[in-house]
Amino acid sequence: MARILVLYGTTERHTEKIAAAIGRSLTALGLDVRLIEAGTQDPLPSFYDGVIVAASLHAGKYQKTVAAWVRGHLAELNARPAAFVTVCLAAASKRPGAAVEVDAISKRFVDQLGWRPAVTKAVAGALLYTQYNVFIRWFMRRIAAKEGGDTDTSRDYEYTDWGDLRRFSQQFGRRILAAAA
Image (cartoon, rainbow, N blue to C red; front, side, top):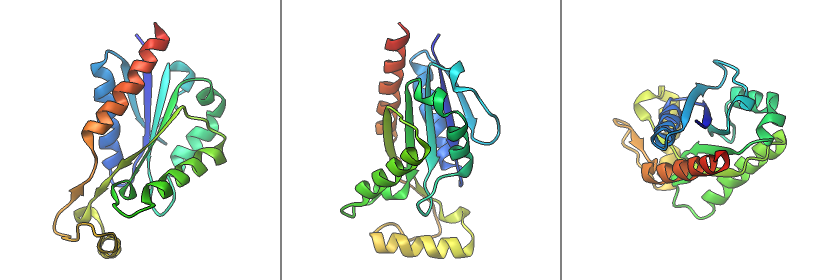
């Protein structure tokens, strides 16, 4: 049975939810999936037939634990099918150029590390007002207002396109299954 590692970095736990959804889609294809939060364990990519790394983007930066893990396993990652999933609110923005900005940040991240994932994917995240402290809630509301987004801070908003994420996961999984056959 082909094995896939889904390693993720998360700040408000939404990327963990996305990683779990990726895992469920891959498991449904018959793949053996391992979900690990970056920084909690140090899995070896060479043990897996494919690797998906998911990280949330905040103020132009990803989790340091994700960067450290990729840096520490670069040769192994570059030797197998891998995907990088960026989770961020800008992926849901209707502002012209927002998608290009997210892609540029993602490309810069992998280029700086020397990583060459076969696939990169931007996924819209969530606006979790109820989980933010007063300052972050105020700041995120200002950004949302500027972007024409949701500003009611009494509730949270998920912008993730779960169907698109499922299709991405299944496509990656089928690629792993074909390579293993």
